[in-house]
Image (cartoon, rainbow, N blue to C red):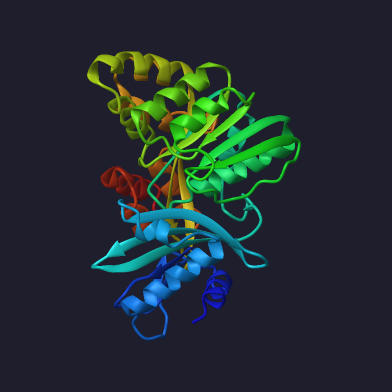
Length: 357
């Protein structure tokens, strides 16, 4: 199938990812389900042709991949009138492969994405550190795009994003928006962050906090009265705090805990869960900082954070298991699905029993 036609078909099918692998037909993921097309299995020559086509659409030189010592490449590209795409090109078993993330034109609607208002309200935060965490493909970029769009229309200032690669393209609204792609526009996240501090930022979006250097620079930026948004691949608020602390040598960890307790404003953890209508819905854990949580972080008692979150529903907080329970109670997901994706299965079973569900 011709590449443009394939990608147009994937957008029409509401696919989230397209898989190009030798030995299998073209495949895609839609609604959390992997679907194989009816075509013949791809040969290594077929996969190379598709990948050459991707590089041509992106206006890039295929030799960038072929001569890459790391044997993979990440970039985004767009097709006028069709959509934007994020490509990861790699080698496997001596042949070329690719996974292409589908990003339709336009910004997502938070209501259609089932992003709760308690998450969207974090767009009102003006300083400190707000983190969105979750496994790869859980919708973190979509949540951040919705938050940035709200900021862009409800406040003024300079928003700087650093992404690898850029997914959603934001137009200037009430805010000036600068979007920098790693490594096309700037070599590394750390370098982009240091540069941003000289560019009069009000909001900084850091695509991912990958190492101690980047984390340290992000925390320092948050200490300087900017709002810093970023992501991590963690599954709970407590895990997120520990992941940040563990990125540093033991002799620095106490100081990092103190800094985090001062600058952290909220952590949102999310995962995509199969729904009752055959699609997927996001479920969220929401932690908003208060005095008790700041003390727990300083005192190395992050294992108690879940209990504080669970007790503060009126402040807009909820644990992941509370989010799953509520989704099941509303009929968005089944009870079995909620239990399968829960962090504390036995406690959730007891809650279902106590509610007669």
